[in-house]
Image 1 (cartoon, rainbow, N blue to C red):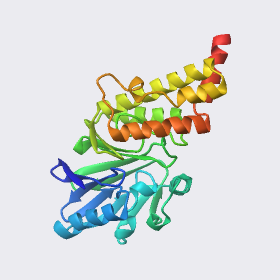
Image 2: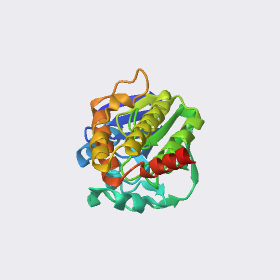
Image 3: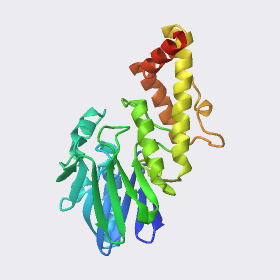
Length: 274
């Protein structure tokens, strides 16, 4: 596990499983945790470091979204208050595969926004649906960071079953916060430009798919879509990591299987004919 300081009272943990991220905010001996990693082994290591080595107590666990690769540690902190968006069950049940052993009902659910004063920080929990319907962005002005969850995956996005337009809107909202650091749900921390890079990737991918679907027969279109290289979609001077390349391939699979961007293609063709 990788541990990195994001400030004098903020630590980021990046687990071995899925490079899932957890962010800890300290108020004396008390800890507020944003997400809790992606495997039981990683979660136990997080618990050992924070509670064992550091002697702190986890009081609150905030979920950016309720998918198994981000809530593995929830049940390790039974006395901590768990906070999630009201649609958390929708996200949990929509994933494939899910790990039911990680599920713990949150004691606090909310609809639009919650503010938590924690030590010198104010954490602003804002419902920001994108990758999932329950997604929460955690904006922390006092630490100059925002926890993005899976609304980005490094310099790209992961479409899965989401509406691409909703992901674009969610990223745009995070851009408006103006924070210098973006903490992803995977991989770790990034400079603010990562949000622009993710939108660039999404726009270029959509453009490529629509162009193929508008001119090719269905079977040929699927084959060409499955071959779209990630480098054709990345922002200038961005080089893809192995993790981003893996999830780009998953995007291509999802686009073919679920006819993603088919509506955008139909709208583009209708506009051309008008």
